[in-house]
Image (cartoon, rainbow, N blue to C red; front, side, top):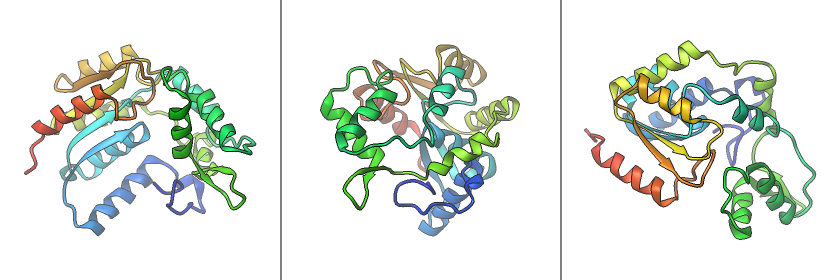
Amino acid sequence: MRGRGLSAYDPNPMRYVPATYAADIAQLLDKLGIDRAIFIGTSMGGLIAMDLAAKWPLRVVGAVLNDVGPEASPAGLARIASYTGLVAPLETWLDARDYVRRINEAAFPLFDDDEWMEFARLTFRTDDDGKPLFDYDPAIAEPIKAGLLKPDPPTAWRRFQQLCDRRPVMLIRGALSDIVSDDIAAKMQAKAPSLTVAEVPDVGHAPLLNEPAALDALARFLERVPVE
């Protein structure tokens, strides 16, 4: 996504919203000559998948929502807002490891030091002085601060139901998730009875999708999604 990793940073941070990202993905599909695809979206990626399906319904054959839905628990949103866009002074990779452990240890209570260091390597890049630097534009927090990402529950639930009405959809949920609570997952299942739900034990927000339970669920889901 723009503003992250090797993608360019947007000079207008107010474009860091799911609608923009969905349009970016649609353009990418055009560039690659891909008419239709199955989308696996983690957290924000799931919201992007719902946006894509709403605007370009024929392009989305199926979707996996990884620990995300049309509603999010206030506790999880508060936790994410508490650190998004805030740059902590990090001098070494051990500092980076300790930082990601501190903000994510409730989600991954079984991680050891090596796994936390791998997590840090996925979160930061190395600056010119060899120090860890956040691998995203800190300005991605600006739309949140400006209130551009305030939830619109009726629209969100309508888009979720449209997504599930027209194609196979699976929710993968971390058993310890503070974003997709038990109540929210149950509501999603009630609103969309065709929804497949898989739970990953001992993980919060969000499963890394390399867990055995996640891999098994993905394999079973993809086997039944029509490719034509």
